[in-house]
Image 1 (cartoon, helix red, strand yellow):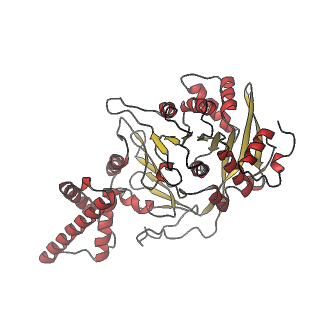
Image 2: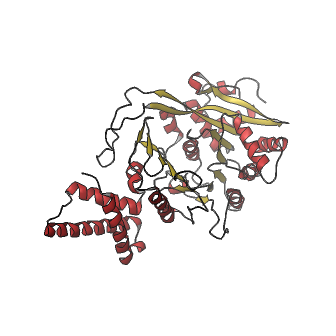
Length: 459
């Protein structure tokens, strides 16, 4: 055996947690607390080794001792056995279907079974509760009364968990591999070309209100971060999210004046709930130059649209949709389900007065030969065994459409598809911009590649 024994890890976790408490470890910074815990773990392991030596019992070899210490630290400060996957830069998504069924999706599109997340489903639930208690800014319950949990992990990954309404507890972790990036980086990644990157950068600088749409896992948050990188450093930004994910407040050089707001669930007594719609209203009183909503999920859409149309120019948000025009249908569906029950015609008028651009992200995949039959590597040089991966696919995310919102006409929002799907569904220059929009963007640095985007009749 070269790995850590689960029973020994469990025993040491309890003992070292008590040692930390007695040593007032909670008063230390995280890095110092982790180093103290490492010292305490090794001290306990040395004590066990001396005892085993005197009794003639089995001893851990150096590799087992190191693996055990790392495993204990992962349980105390990370996500236990899942932490090795969190630390692996090639991992993109982790999906746990019960404690012993962990599916790992890699950046190359391959998929394989990973290590068990916990010894039992009860241990998995307890681990999630522990993580929520350590990492959440506000109380985040995870029990029968509150069976769902959303949480941002220290590396920026998004954790989503569910229990009691599913046969076994499930956990999904979505890694954000591109956190600190700009539109130029998206050009290198093939998500946009240089003309579209220039267009989007100018749109942000010209304070256009932008809605980013796309399917799940299409790269909406990544694009939103890249757009936000174009916001001048002197501007005050307020971000609003169901669970912290954008992380703009973590880059004080690029965004020195950021306030990050996170929605809050009700407490045990059913009090203290702070939904996103209320956060958006609160943001309007915080002298924000721009308001960014990480993801529109419901009734906050009306507050956001009102904010965009009432002086918060340059604001942005993301929304799930199946096409660029489908963004309008999604907004309308949220509006009609809101307490205001806003009818379609009124919603379209609000959209026309608030939204300047809709940017839609698409994705495709193509088989990548040689993806099957490989061993899954880990951070510590071990593997989970010769696991055959599902064949790898190159999953490419890219902008396929950009709409310029022009007006509303009863049951429809009138728009120009200024970038439309071309070969491979990637965005290419489409309908001409309105002359006023075109001139504004050029004034803010847009290079229209010879003016083609601005040709033709412009309203």
